[in-house]
Length: 126
Image (cartoon, rainbow, N blue to C red; front, side, top):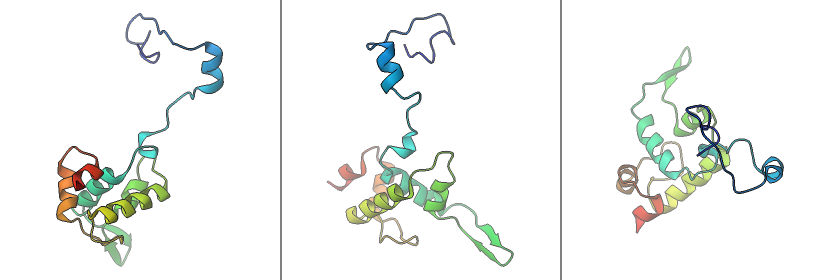
């Protein structure tokens, strides 16, 4: 059982298959956030679709507009690296899921398919 739950929910013992010295010297206290380590292509497609449904927000007294997917992803508690977002946009453009790499790009039929099926984006193309 995970050490985080052992003793917190009920009595228990955590058995590790490595020494305490190894744990203290090489193991991180927490895993990095998944949004900073996982591929963002699928998430970007979903955010792209949902961003079109969000209301506009006030930028200045004279200007209102919708937030872009990049802006929305940067508003998360632990945002992904901007270069990872750019890489995912490039992959989606190469696969044909979006019309181009600009913020105004639209989702293609393949992009909507990627959003609706529980597969990696590369498998949707095959």
